[in-house]
Each structure stands twice: as structure tokens, then as C-alpha cells.
Length: 208
Image (cartoon, rainbow, N blue to C red; front, side, top):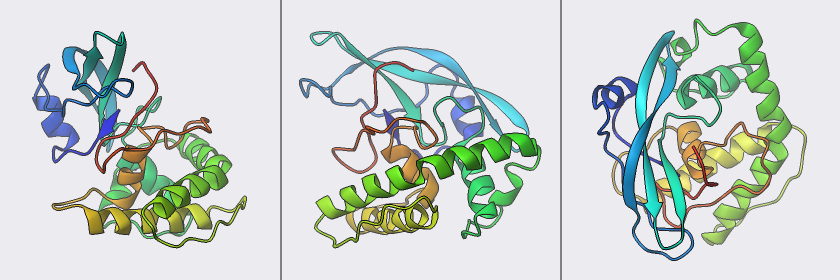
């Protein structure tokens, strides 16, 4: 599962083995899960590699465990969601927050090309999934299957605005929020993405 948080990577890493994380509900029975230890995870931002500890949650009756990923973690990626997003969206001509263009300065261009290709490969699938979620809120959408990345960038923007209307408090950037909603899988190859019961926490497959 992924969740939104106020902490930066530095702040989260400084918490050591006891980082703050919400206790999720079991996706099988609905019980509130208990925490069951942590494991270390490397995260890189602006050329600095941090070690953060990821909490595990467990539902004993269902024999189910979940890894609680903070919003800046991308599954199977060393770099933060913000760094990857800035690198991908900059080359696509999309607007990014001021200052985020420095987050990927030291990342090899070959790696950035891999990010962009993976995102482009999944663009149509992601656009349809995000539009489906927006439609479930009662907002009109027009499904536009396409190999282009423009529809998914537009869908991510509308998704962020839709969550903002339903959420009190500060939200992460649109890219980071989209990553939270798909449980850290924004660059994965999965087609059956999980969707949140409520903004801020998402369901994701078993395992870290």
C-alpha cells in the first residue's frame, strides 16, 4: 500500500526504524491491520542515496501482509517518485513544480530514457484507469485510448483536482499523488492496478 505523508525523504529517513505510517484496513476482511516490523529500502534523490525503513502491516486471521510505502517511493525504482516524474514530464513538455528539475540532475540519461519509455508504454492503460476512477466520482470523462502520453497527463491533472475537491489539507504534486493511487506502481507493467477506498491510501499486491 502507498500513503501520502508530509515528511521529505530526509525527514522520513531520520525517523529510522520507527517511521510514521497509517494502519491500513485488511483488503480481505476489513479489519485494521497491526504493524509487524520494518525492512530497509534505498531511495535516491538529487544524487543522494538514503536508507528508509518500510513498515509491514499484517492481518493474522487472513494471513495477509502489506508494505506501507510512503508517497515518494516507486516500486522497483531507486529514485523518488518526484525525481522520476520531473525527468519524464520535462521531456514530454508538461508543467512541473519549480525546483523539481534538479532532483534528477545526476541520473544517467540512459536511465531517464528507460523511465520515459516505460511511462509511454503504459500511457493508454493508465489514462483509462484514471478516467475510470474519476468517472466513479460522478465527473464526466471521455475515454480516449491512445498511444500518446497527452491523455494520461491530462487525466493525472484532472485526478489531482478531483482529489483536491474531496480532501482537506495539503496534497502532494499530481504525479506523486498518481503514484500513491496506484500503490507505487506508476512505472510498472501491471495492467490490473489497485484503486483506493479513500484518498491517501491504496491497495496493492502482497509483498514489498
